[in-house]
Length: 491
Image 1 (cartoon, helix red, strand yellow):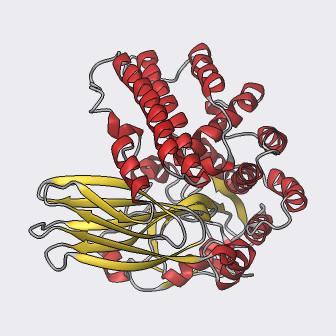
Image 2 (cartoon, helix red, strand yellow; image 1 turned 180 degrees about the vertical axis):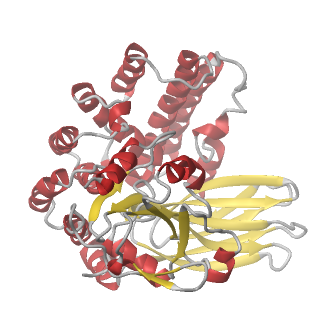
């Protein structure tokens, strides 16, 4: 079975052959700083599109640093970036006690120079320099950057002035963009990005402030009427924009929220289900998105891919993913994600209760090897840790509860962490052991066990048969994990 939870060569070929190679072009970017600057300029690319996430599943974008220029060593860097679509970059400067971020918009074939001046302002020259100036003037990195500007007071319950100023900023952006279009030829993608951010950010800000008022700055769950008020606001204020608006993360988030609200009113979630969307709700979301977004093919593809990936990775039952996969293939036969999504389903089918543990060789703290597929003896609880000590404080009580009856094993799945370094941070207990995995073994776990940060537990019986692979994190008590262990102990 091919590697499905990373970009394998086969997946790259599928992606390249399906859409990326058609319009690929090199953009030349020059970033520089004035003499006397001692900080670091970093250029970060936001690649909008589905990419393998940490563990199993797809994320709808990927941030990657494409350049880092330490001013103390050099003041200029030139780079060629292969682009297939209009792309958002973040240019960051940190130095002299200053931290600034500017949003850049770049299309394939552009030539752009960005220079950080001695006063920490930025100067642009080249293709679409006017676009960058517009973004610099009217857009910060995200809506939360405006909170201090708008006078937000964290200890104050009512911050309605923030909403007023956010709405004023929206109107200012709309007027400014209208004037900008009157004097500049504007590409559809840039207009889509600007409109997407302009629409979505005030909605996020308004809900944030209203929710704080409802909670009275306390950590508590909103009641049904309060949640309805927030949802009604979203339904009334959101509008579907042209497909180019997908370039905006804020717009993508609001689009999903707008689709979610009607479905969750029909199929509400609660604490008992760990706020998990039910199989019925996933079907409803998928079909609603398919019908409602039919006039917007890219947004339809985005949502159908998102919900199918969600069904395969965030719902304990494998049935929704299996049933939706067939429709996805017929609706989007040219989607580059079909092989990945089909392999998601195939992997999950191999992890049903009664399946054998896969062949994995993991190292104990004393250097000896544990072959997981040969496990015999006590029931086994595998805990996949993406950081040192992850989950151990929360499971201490459960370890003691089942001491001598169950073997807890904390498996490090931190790529690049050497065994010698790992040993200095972990210590076995009578109730638990620690296991270390090479990067290769971590890859095997991604393939064979679909390890994921959201479902970090696996319970197997004393014969090495999987009882439950899809156990989520629950705090303070993990009822699902407890139930799986009790089942493993049953005669």
